[in-house]
Figure 1 (cartoon, protein in one colour):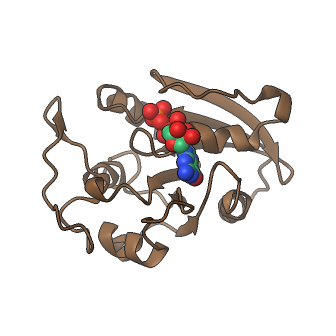
Figure 2 (tube, rainbow, N blue to C red):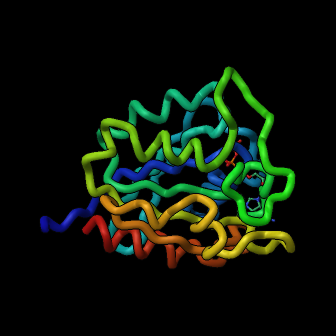
Figure 3 (tube, rainbow, N blue to C red):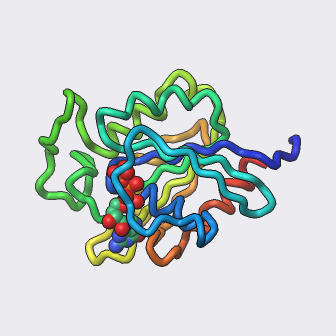
Length: 191
Ligand code: GTP
């Protein structure tokens, strides 16, 4: 493989999962914004870690912007998919521990459930034939009712992903726990 020193990574996930907070962790202290606002459209962030310059696009999880994601699929070399591990409501029907089951929140006709969203990404024509590595952050692991990685993987059927290398990492984006470990894995896959 050719050694790459520049990588383009997409940061995806439902709204409020912690994408902006995660990207903030990787930026230099003086570049961090103290207050997060729900992302409008998408934000391009640049950071440098492990000897590579990473251009990360934080695509907003807000439903009405989700069609912006797919235009970036062609050019990306890796994906970070952020999951709010405490957001049981949106794990959807397959969630093992979610008793409330069917998620009824629909915006613009799209089901707002992690599994449906992830499947849309995985089946996209610009991604389904490529071995793009996917790092999952089981974020908000500090919250009491957060699901373990094993349960998240089962709820989302991650074992069915056969054509792409994937890895799941628990993270706490506020303290930074787990974030570096995850990106290390991703960078190694791309290099
Ligand atoms: P959108 O821009 O709406 O798509 O949201 P986002 O995915 O960028 O989420 P954001 O980073 O704005 O975080 C949403 C909220 O969750 C904020 O109040 C964060 O402080 C909080 N949050 C993010 N990560 C964690 C975490 O690991 N633990 C806890 N307890 N809260 C978190």
